[in-house]
Image: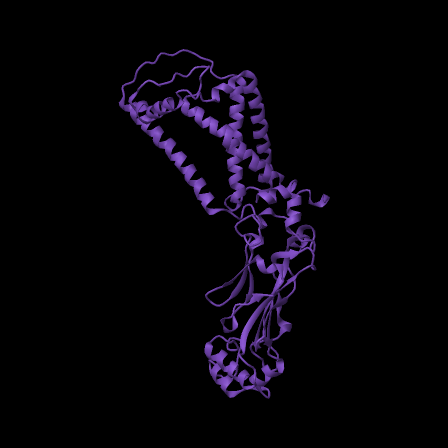
Length: 448
């Protein structure tokens, strides 16, 4: 507990992640990647490939061990809950026959492939693409219908009914090679960014025998954590998906239509201000100047100025820090953890300032400034709208004089009414739920 005080939303992280998710960020050894039992080598064994090995010669003794990064997938905790944990995925392809299906025995595989310690002539003729009289790794692959049909025919000749290729993926959770200190994952951007550790893909194989995509072994909760992706060159990957894991990772996940709506609202508002301001300036240049009658009026008190300035600053900074949290990859100069803390502090300032402002306006009676009067309100709102559309550009008088007792016109009252009674409470409630997800996880889970 004490060693993780630096971690924001500690309880939330501990619920979603196993300890190994951060403390086994890298395997510094090789591990099985896939087994291909659809072909048999001259020594009578299937093809076996390990991950985390950069081969530098013809023998394993000259191999350079590079290790690999495990994939994060749901792990059953045994109490009805799951958490992400590092896994290695071992893919196996093999022949099955009959109904119900059964794996083809190794003795039958050896019998249909090998004539002593050599391959049968028809197999050599079909598989030996370069005609050198030997089969290399590139040739020892069932990558065509003709190759699959040939081996299937040999199996049928041995009395095995309806032979076919099947593949399966077996996930193995990793609980060893635990790292501590600087070797463990401690950077927030490792997960909260476009290149999230949570959705890092893991290669399953460099080819798919017979074009058969494997399936996860039944009963594994890891099976629902993502999807299989096959590249154009035939390489097969497992791609974790947070949507399949019921996770939403800040800084990585987003709802596209919400992003577009927010961008359109921002650009539309900015464009409206620029266009309206430009038209007013153009109208001012066209209309002859006049000397207005002026008198000094102390319209806003010190506290009103202070709370409005503080609230404006808090809202603008909340927007900026929220954008950094949502898209941290665009603002790499900022610390994700630091921005989260600043965002929470600004949210607290906003709520406290709003509460104090509400108390002030209720006690002073200034709250009436923000309450639209039903009688004649819509007519006044239409009149104000027409003034903003036409009259203001022609130099017409403002339809409603601004006084100390009436500072807001009907449209401003409507806007403030919506902000104070809808947007601000909604912002506060959703913000509290996001902040309090570690304190009230059940409430957050029910609300999604």
